[in-house]
Image 1 (spheres, rainbow, N blue to C red):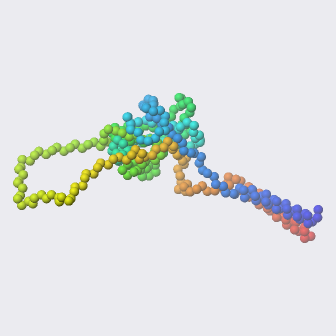
Image 2: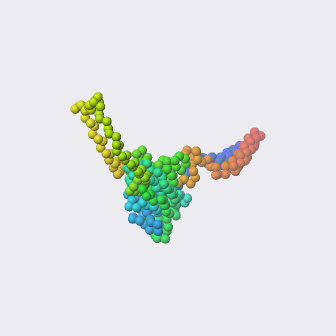
Image 3: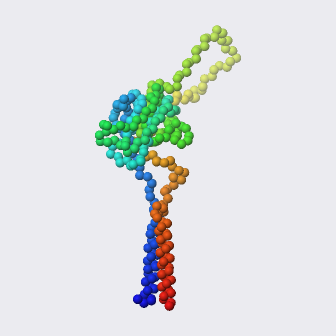
Length: 306
């Protein structure tokens, strides 16, 4: 082999070694965006049960809407509908809240005041099986109202009591069109009496024994309105809005985040930079190979000159 051939061969070897070291390093640092979280929305089923756990009225259902109760639902059993693939670690909060109201339905509910609240978290273990005769499900219980009230079943763990701070939200208020709770699954309302006791009427004062003095002659006679002036008709009583304007309901509830969001978690996830790859050893090896290639190239040039 001639000197020129040896120099070309050395240069080729050095270039090949350099490329072999640098390409894996570039691959390790290439950015790639990875989606976070694998939990999807899930469908909830419920049924009302009595104190012994036996179903009252209908069995498992996902039916939404507002229902007038024959008796207030004190305990609601919940589960995830069958046939769903729920990921490991996915949780679905479901809550039951009881409010006192100013009337027996949504349109007359007026001011609502939270009385009781309960929350459970459904997981893959709560998905209904084909034979669930031996499977037990989680229950939600609240106090039964003894006056006008409303009970809400919804898919999050926020307490809608009108207070501020984490974990609290605005209380439902029909006159102000505040349609909370969010993720409402179903609701019941009713009652037959006001929650505020009526004030006793004051006794009628006895008639005065004093005689009323006769009308003074100087008093001007009562005037009547001119014929062209008309008295406005009395305002007609307002009719409640159609039933379709009740708050919307859905049996599909979102998953709960495994950790509370940080102030920066609302930003899109940063592209991964291969932090899990062995960047340090690769970089060290690359530096060593580059040094060897440079030495080989230097030796080839000296050989060419001599």
